[in-house]
Amino acid sequence: MPLPQTEIPGRLQMQLAERGIRMTGPRRAILSVIETATKHLDASQILRKARTVDASVDRSTVYRTLDLLKRQGMIDELDLMHLNGERHYYERKTGHDHIHMACLRCGKITEFVSKTFESLKKQLEGECRFHILVARLEVGGYCSACRR
Amino acid sequence: MPLPQTEIPGRLQMQLAERGIRMTGPRRAILSVIETATKHLDASQILRKARTVDASVDRSTVYRTLDLLKRQGMIDELDLMHLNGERHYYERKTGHDHIHMACLRCGKITEFVSKTFESLKKQLEGECRFHILVARLEVGGYCSACRR
DNA sequence: AATCGTTATGCGACTAAGTCGCAATAAGAA
DNA sequence: TTCTTATTGCGACTTAGTCGCATAACGATT
Ligand SMILES: [Mn+2]
Ligand SMILES: [Mn+2]
Ligand SMILES: [Zn+2]
Ligand SMILES: [Zn+2]
Image 1 (cartoon, helix red, strand yellow):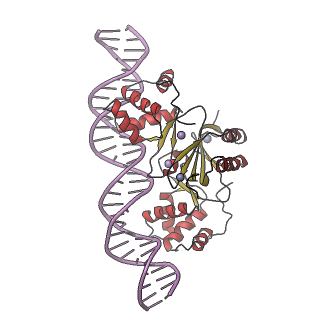
Image 2: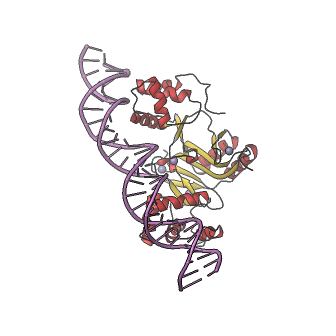
Image 3: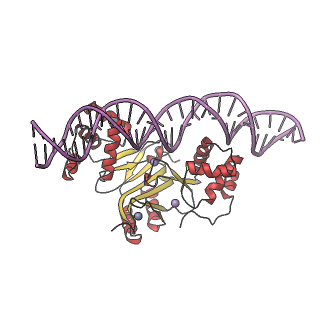
């Protein structure tokens, strides 16, 4: 379902412009990597790919840009159950959140959109009077192929 | 709702024994820290507290024990939105999971048990044929006191 | 109680992820 | 163009977590 290839390229760039945030070469490179990603990428993968666009991009710029995008609510940060290593993964945020399921045996990541999840968030907003900016549901276990 | 002081001390120790896992001094110290915790602790806090019981406990033993307890499904690991720093937090697992909400302004962590969350997990098990071992829902935003 | 295979430990050196201060550079408004 | 301010690369640093190894402790068995 997710990782929407479906959007206009340059959308992230446009959103930043709308908010009066300065656009730079490194940022353009990093944004394009995130926009065209077909899977969840970690910071060092984003760096590597961004460097194929602009060879001068530095690691700290990647982290600073990821922070910016997080603060702007334009990307989500994931653990994916830290199946190997402690790195975090990133994906751009779309209108509807989705759940991540990570298979502890084969490592497969499955994504799932659920109306119940939306209700649950509504419940939190209402009953707890909590204003949600990010909601991250990650599940670990065995996928349909791996559970015996 | 959370962090159940209500249980028999030594319960974790008993569960490990049942599974034929060797008990040692350092493990007893670490288990007692986790059992008597009144808030979410990170690895270095667990180390510090465990050392007041058994001064020889080493950092790597803490990590190895946390890994063991995770594998045994006896504790949960949390990010708590990485409000400051990258450390992970731990709490013992009880029968019913709960949701963690982290206020991005004041840092307050709120816990919440929800029947809807339970239904959602059932939905994942059914519709996705996914066998859930861990489910972690973490929310970031503004708590009732902080949203204006 | 003494033996003994196995598992766990402390130590220390290491990796990997992420941060930060700073001087140099580039945006973009005027 | 000029000028202010935000951003960058660099490099040194911190912090979280890992790993190999020699030693020690567990606990089942005699
Ligand atoms: Mn994490
Ligand atoms: Mn909790
Ligand atoms: Zn699988
Ligand atoms: Zn608050």
